[in-house]
Image (cartoon, rainbow, N blue to C red; front, side, top):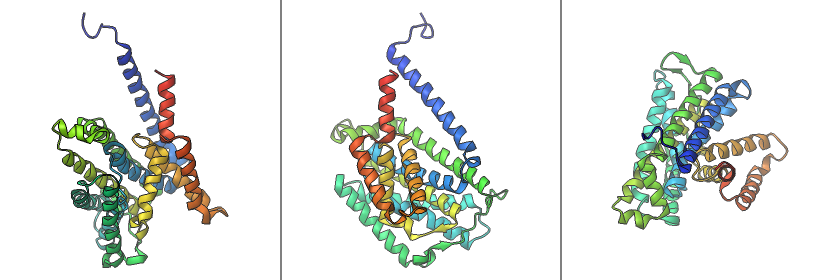
Length: 328
């Protein structure tokens, strides 16, 4: 009897159904993303997508490698500043060139940060990344090309590939959406690759991964660099969208904010950072326009505490538990 005619085992059927559900979910989200700018304000949606990519990049490091970085704002800001400076000082450059340069700069910075930090674990790793990020923050305050506390304003959006005018919010949205889809696809492929499986093994039991012969530091460094590059891509894209690069993106508050987004959505889940980023950005936008605008941080903190106490796996993590329980 051939494999095609053999009866599938229950576990194989479950895996196949899970793949089908996942594929249907991807298609549904893609369709929603394509029609979203006709329903909601495109600039608001672009902000969510940029922060969602930033959170997904951070989640790759925390959720799958088990490394808590308190310095990811440095990569977001580096991508933004490099892209903003190049596009402002060289008007002939196209936006994709500036974004690529900002992403590469963040990759290089991530390589330096990772080489210095990955030999430490736990709180020591977090404190090293925080210290390095603060050094970058103070460098950007003093550096002449960043505009100091004023930041870089009026960064031109330009024309994509010299053909598509990105001054249109609709055209800009679809470009940002394409960037997010590509970044998310890279993360999804990384997580489900043999490399991603080794990262999970390191997260669960690092000494055992070492005993199996894996070069743990090398795997951590590659994960750190990929995460830094994607965070830089998010920062570069955000600068083009808002035509602004500022110190806000380099502040340690931004590193704390991306941790909040990831934990709310669900650490170690692919869609958790997207949901968390959407929730945090939406709340910030709505509360800023209300009489409670000065209490944004307090309200977000209270929501975070409630979510952590109520469902420790995050919003998406809890939904996944329900789906597994009811659709075995």
